[in-house]
Amino acid sequence: MTADDSFGRLDDDDYPAYTYTMGRAADMLGTTQGFLRAIGEARLITPLRSAGGHRRYSRYQLRIAARARELVGQGTPIEAACRIVILEDQLEEAQQLNAAYRRSAGTIDQRAAA
Image (cartoon, rainbow, N blue to C red; front, side, top):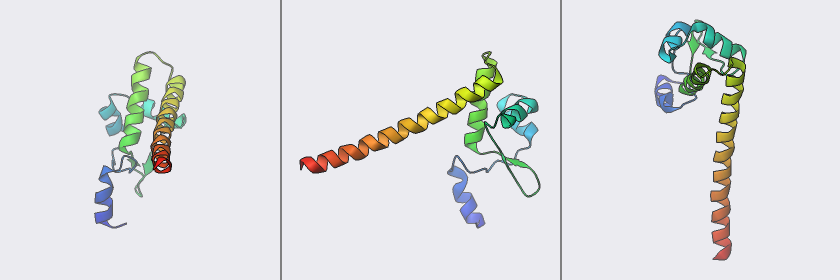
């Protein structure tokens, strides 16, 4: 991947463009490094590592961590918060697939009616 390719991927939510240390990510999210370790151990997020060992978080991972932090802040145990976030993410994906299927089926129905 060239530098130009990497620059173009900055809009990709799943691209781990952020090279913040765990401390910087925790500061951004208003949480502790221990919280980030805990959600990592729960496998909610798994930041990629650079060649130098620095954690690389995607925007998606930071949003997921922020949602878990929100739930824990409301009193939800961390394990339950991680499960809720996973289920919310799965539901959103299923709804997107369902909407795409409905659009596709509508197009097929319109062609059949013509």
